[in-house]
Length: 141
Image (tube, rainbow, N blue to C red; front, side, top):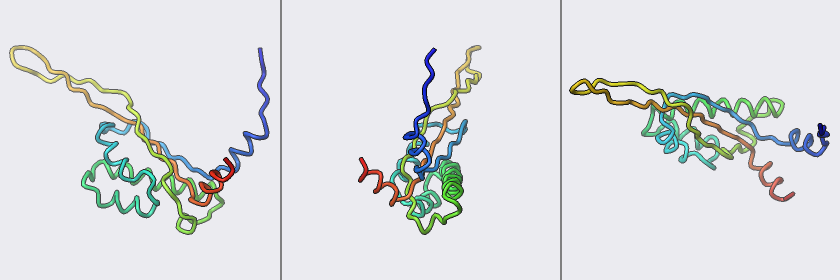
């Protein structure tokens, strides 16, 4: 059996990464409709993204994303020793929605039949990073 060595390079990458992640699992809303809300904030500054979500037409969906974005900001602040998010130009670096399980229900139909109702759930992942850190990573590559 091979044993893999833990390299110092990967440890440095993990420690130097200032990216923070927040994940919401089993959100009881359809992934297709949630992607419409998510696409509006991808690549936006955090303050701008919060404003977009606050005044979104799909309020019921935006509430979940807004709460998750605030959690990602808080995670970033904790990871960076309490530095403020306002001073560091945070950006929503990546955000995506994956489908979760589908709850199947039956609805009565005429002549003794039944119609299937599929209630879809999703997983949302938001990654937040500072603009300065993004520029240094691009310069190193």
